[in-house]
Length: 526
Image (cartoon, rainbow, N blue to C red):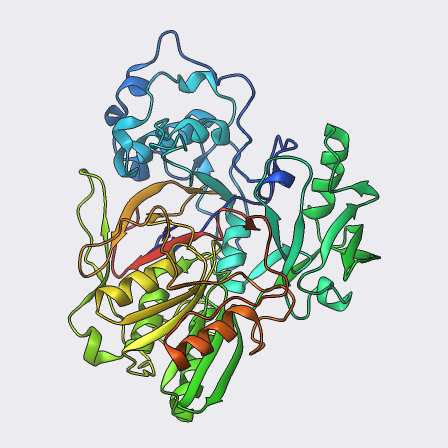
């Protein structure tokens, strides 16, 4: 998904899939689907329906400007300073102020604002999270799926830590799961973050999960067992230890892992591959966060100095992030000759929102705040390629899809190896209020040619199964090997992956890691 992150100084746009930390009301759904979201699990009974809605409930235009009137008026104001040293902007308010803020903001900026029900009475809600959950379109797509599948929240502290420091609470494991609902479950380790608790314990890509704290993960279905499994898989605090039984090569083994604040490196496996027809650059890219700006700059500097004449961009698990970084990445691939004067992505908003300037192919660094920032305005290295190979799976989302779509809009040939992407052409403005950051769809993105209709995903040039039997970056790993073979022959190779999946799998991660963020210079706070 794409997302726009809003602060007092600037507006950002992200792409990803979400929810996380501090979630109330978790049921047994998450282990069959994704990690417990911050947005509360929908209740089994409908939310309250007003018998006598107020004028503001029926016509939120009467609420006025959400930012100037209700923003930062909190029932329980925070005190002190945030991680950056700034004083919290909260002032004393009421829960009703928080709900009015959400209703007025939704009415002004939500892409489908005119489809939000006006039958809910603010006075009947006791939680801002519960109220936010109903502030979206109830419409369904032609295949019966919710039209809006990307409505979620995150605690502001966690969101800020993830974006500026790359910190995530967990074990450093990325899982893939079978897509069936409920038992039996199949979860496999897709990636292990270097330096994480999982890496220290020797866990490997391809290991299968059997038990969590002694509970049969594959088959358990009762509520108590599911609660124990969720508590083990998604630790609530750093230092909390849990026991796991996994299987590798048909042999089960036990391991104890303690939750930790894991710093995730977005750029990995930067290398130059020598081939008969020239040097091929390769990198694994997992997240368009602030940390990645300097890391991408360093990687492309390496490629340029090495004289690579082709590139394999591995975004098979990249859920998205900052759209300005996506535009920078696309520019570093294509260079000025192909992108000059062309739109990387144009955001299309609702009929109440003035159109922002399009995101062009950005040739200099934005200078996002991080623990290793790149100086604002630094010229970016370019490869000037007319084609690029992208490794993709269903875990390739939002801002990652924008790179593919944006390059194609500039007539760069994108050879896609792997699977169909997730299909998230929409974006948000992350809006913080009273300690919670809210994510609500605000726009659809299109490329220079006006194309952005890929809700069913971007299909690969060559369909190849993700190969969990080898490390990502290994030249014999299925997707990379197929990319190199296609480059040499121009034909899709016959899959010889030893561990091709027999059932569909999908990445397990919160919605906030499948979004796009858009930064608009000089934009006023909203």
